[in-house]
Length: 206
Length: 269
Image 1 (tube, rainbow over the protein chains, first blue to last red):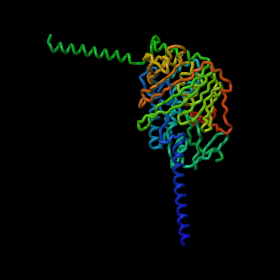
Image 2 (image 1 turned 135 degrees about the vertical axis):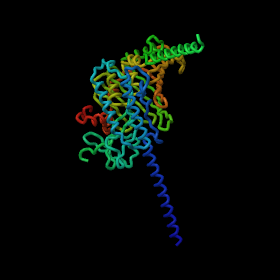
Image 3 (image 1 turned 180 degrees about the vertical axis):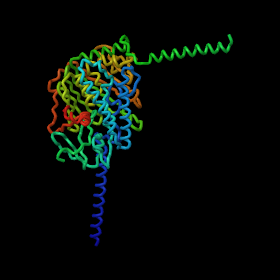
């Protein structure tokens, strides 16, 4: 009888030890997942107006009239970008794809203008903010969520990616790397100085 | 003359004078490029001309930058960068951020490649051109981060002349036992500070950029070390040894461009 009691006590102790170990382990794993890489826990944004080390800023200044157009373009984009970034970071999820598309179109036009000219025409289409890298607004932002998942076309930061509820499975299709987490597919891409993850349609055959 | 009329007359004259002064001030407010005859501007252009004419160099710098958080709290992050540049068309930058992430950017005259050793990912974009074109392509087209990009293009003198509205010498100061000229300059969107040696080659020792119109006026600073004007690097320095298991990824700007114009998909790759 006494032996049976001792056996039950030992079993109870073992159960408690295993339970506590599993609990602590799960906390550690969650902390690792949410902390991102390099001890980036705390949710501090690493990107901002000064991180580009540019000799210019997209914010409105008091410059020469000849630069007004470029400044207005940059300024409005930056303002929109920051507002989106803030909302996304605060609430995590709002659809900003429409605005993003407008910015993309703007930038694309700018790029095409630039490339269409010869290098020695530097002054002819001078943009005194060409060295200002611009993606920190959306690279760091979260993304839209539709029915609990990020919307197709949105980009999420590496920290958001590593905080996903599952461990993504990496698949290479036609030389392109994709990650799958549940029904969602992500394509890693470089933005600014870091890796960001674009929510995409499932690749062919998946 | 009636005292009231005299008083009104004096007031009118004063008002006209004030309005004229205000109008004059208004006409002066638009940006005017810093006078090339300014001693400070001369020093900056001397630096710019010197840098833009270098055939090759290597340099390292430690830097820090403020990021103003949503809460308004200002947090500083940092990184170490080492750059080797050989004109007309090769450069390599090794970077390690303060959280330990390591990355390399290489331009070999045909392709600009970024390799992130931490994530074992790389991306590349073909480009026919010189370093100026590659840097503009990298920063502007690919929307990638390359701090102090302007310092490394041959158009630096023109860029400074175009952007700077004023420049003044703050003082001569001693850093690590050597005398430097501390220069403060202003553009319409950034306040700049340079520390240039009072003697010898005009290579910047320290730079601070203040983004004065951004919330919280964040700063970027860089302290340069190990300027070498004859590194004579081996050709292999400009070819990346990317591990076979590393995955190739696109630049987000390319993905966005492909989304915006599906018919041109893959054009950049």
